[in-house]
Image (cartoon, rainbow, N blue to C red; front, side, top):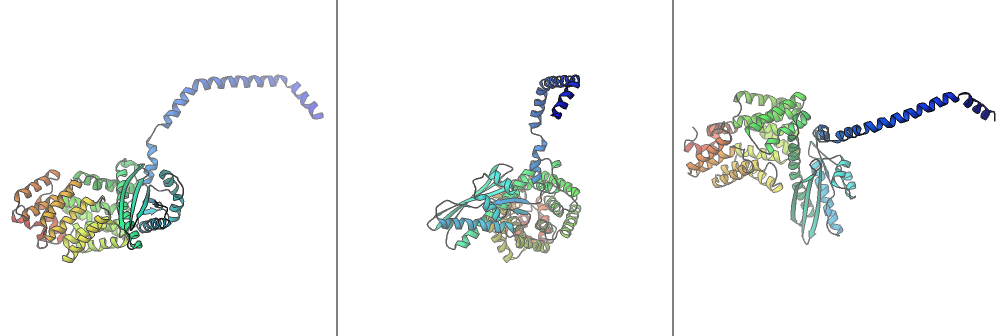
Length: 469
């Protein structure tokens, strides 16, 4: 009771102060309403502007290129029947794929348990990729009729929001485990090439300022897998020099630059051939010392050492890559080319087998244009000149900038007694790259094979018609 009396007395004594406070609150309310009425349109415009796309919208994409690993999720393949046995076959193929990818360096694959768990739901690919923190998602299905199975595999790129590759595999079931492994190896061999191409294409679409050293290395190889040109080589070298400047300890950037300097040598677009060779040699030695077990370094070392005449070191490096990553089809192709150029009869047979296995595994691989050229070198060793002409034409259709094809073609035409076609081939080469003449091509071959006495397979036709000295 005393508290109530005290409160009433206080309100009576402070009536004027309370009235003033009430007036202030009323004025503040009116002011707030007026300001809100005036400023709302302006604030809405700012809000809309903030929702417009900006360079920062590319942040997730750039982040994907700031991670030194490709990322892949392999979902449980669907068995499109009610047969429980087919589910086991589909699961076996999926497990084989994951096992093969897990052995590949520089690629991060989601665990089988994680992939299987998300496969059980009905979430879309985008959500699954976000859940597993991967950019690429591999899915597939299996059908079974009588003694045959059909497996369809699809690869989706989350950044592109698209399916970027699909392939059908038909097999007759004799040894189930063998069939599962065969299909899995074919899928992995193809997918690794497609992942490399997609990452490189994506990096090529981004401004160089937004990329770190790893991203710049991916961007550098955009031309290699799209349109091989002298200007593309020079620009790629610029990207790689930037990558080395950003991260001097990044061995793969040094090795990649060394390999592209070797390409400058073989295409003769470098201003000083010997200086270019010396720089390539120094770069690859440093890269090898930095990371002697890195497959990218070893792969590029094999190409560099081949082109500067160190074929034995090149072979050891490439065989090591193939041993470490059996489904690295690019390295297998480089090894085949080296054996075809520098090996004996048994080596040439091995080279042919490697290339044919590559085509059987991944006929649409991004490196297929180069494999056709490599196979043409094999066919020159076999003196199958019509086949050389056919393969070099096929390679040029797929990769018009690979100028070396024209010189193999010209030599084959000469061996068949068709000088005029040989001259046309050499003239066509000059329209693509005027720096590389038939004489300089021959000198490249001499350096690779260890001298003129070992080069007869590749230049004798040109010599006979005096198209080289």
